[in-house]
Image (cartoon, rainbow, N blue to C red; front, side, top):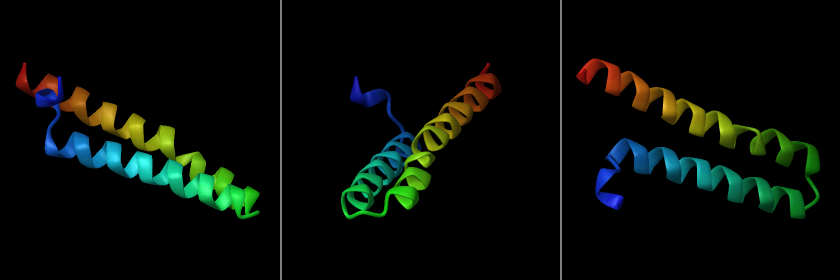
Length: 61
């Protein structure tokens, strides 16, 4: 299963996970508005990763 992940996939997943963790840390430290802003990045980052996969798939045929 993990052999299908490219380096770009791993980087995008790591960045999304780090964004989620950073958002939770900020939330529990009391910076709730900033934490919500950073938390919104997670689906955006994952959506960008899906977009890149679709572009790669259409170029390869």
